[in-house]
Length: 112
Image (cartoon, rainbow, N blue to C red; front, side):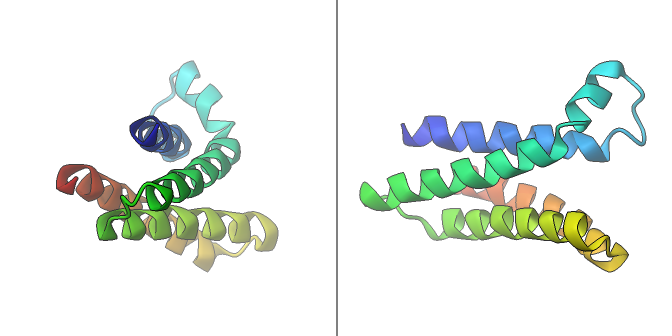
């Protein structure tokens, strides 16, 4: 169950990241996925929280996972702030934190 939730979080996060590709890739599939950027991001954050709850309940909490979770939640919170406030500075931070979160997720997978 823990692995399934982790993989699901990772896939949803990557699907949300397709929004950043639409500027460079004009393929209809990428455009269709990018339209659901917010949905995929919210689902990634929600599944990541469930993943953490299951990990803590099973005694499997890892520091690398905690950092990855904080990254996912921060990315989601910043994305929500961009949507609500329409602030370019927050958007810039969101675009920086997203790839850093991906790096944290990869480190979490490698370490575990």
